[in-house]
Image (cartoon, rainbow, N blue to C red; front, side, top):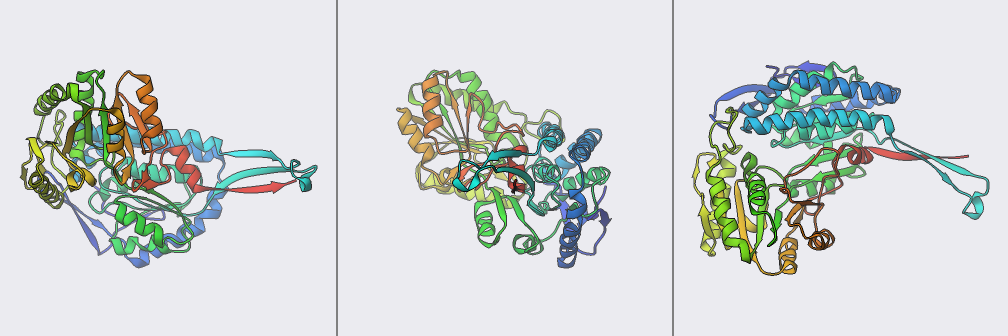
Length: 469
C-alpha cells in the first residue's frame, strides 16, 4: 500500500499526514503523506520545466502512453476496486463499474490524442486578405490544476488527467483528502507510461495548500469538481486562467402517463440510491403524472425495500454507508425541516452514525432544502403533476441544471422537454445518472461552467494559434 505522494515523477514520504478512514467500519486504513507549500511550489516549477519536453512528444507517443495507462489500470483492476471500496465506502458493484469506466476513459483519450483539432481557413473574403490562407493549430494552453472530489476517486481523477496527457499539458492533481489512495495508485500506473518528469504530480494536501493552484500565475487551466460555493469562489479568484467547473445538481425525472412503469422504477431507484445518492446526477426529484402516481409510488417503495443493504465489500450490496457522519447529520436536519412544512416521509428517514436509510419523501415544495438544494445523499422527492408544462416549470425552478430524465415513448414530449428544460443533458428512458465518458458532461446555472468528456475537456486544455500565409 503506497502512502507516499507523487511529486514530478518521484514518490516521497513527508512528515505531514492525512488520515484515511474506512467509512463503513471507521477503521484507520493508512496515513498518507501530505504536501506543504514548498512541495506544491516544487510541483509547479517541475511542470513549467516539463512543458517544453512534453511538447516534443508525437501524437503516437502520447496515444501509446495513454494505452499503457489504460492497460495498467486493467491489470490492477481488483486492487483499484478494493481501494475505492475501502476509502470511499462505495459498494463493490459500483466501484467495479468505476474502474471499467476509467479504463475506457484513458482508451478514449488515446484515440482523441491522435486527432487534435486543426483547420485551414480562407482569408480572401476580406478585402485585405486577397491571396492569403490561415492555418490554425491547437496546442496545450499550459499547466493544468485538477481538483477532484471523493465520490469518484478514480474516474473523476481520470477526467482531469487523461485530457491533460492527450493535449500534452502537465497537470498537478489535488485529490480529495477523504480518498487520496486511489489517485496515488493511479500515479503508480502512470509512472510507468514514459511521460516527462514533471508532467504529473499527485499531491494530497490541505485546502490551504491546494489553494495555491487557484491563484498561481504559472497555472493556465483550473478544472474543479465539487460544491458550487467553493467552485464559483475559485473562478472569481483564478485570474486569467481557463476554468472548468462541475458543481453538482438537483436532477429531476419526469414520468409521463405512457411510461413503462416497471422500467422507470428500476431505473430511478438506482438513480436515487446508487452510492447512497452521493452522485452529482443523483435523481433527487421525480415528477409523476397524477394518473399513475400512486401505482408508481407503490412500485418504487417495493423496489427500494428489495435492495441489498450491507457492507460495501459484498459483491451483492446495492446500498451502504455515506462518506461520513457530518453529511448524514446534515440530511437528518434537512428532513426534519421538511417534515415541519408538511412533507411526508413514505419510506426510510432514519440515521445511525453515517448510515442513512434510503428515503422517499412526498408532498415537497419550493422553500425547503431537501427539495431546493443538492442533497448529495439517499433522499428522493416524488410528487405528482397534471400538465407537462407545469412539470417543466417545476424542474426549471431550481438554481441547478445538470441532468434531467424523461420516461415516455411520446416523441413530441421528448422534443418539448429537450427544448425547454434548462439542463446540460436530457436522458430518455434512463436514469439521470446515465453517463458515458465520451459525451459532453456538465450543466448550466449553478451546476457549472464548461464541459467534461474527453474531447470536450481537451478543448478547454487547448488554445488555437494561427499562421497566415
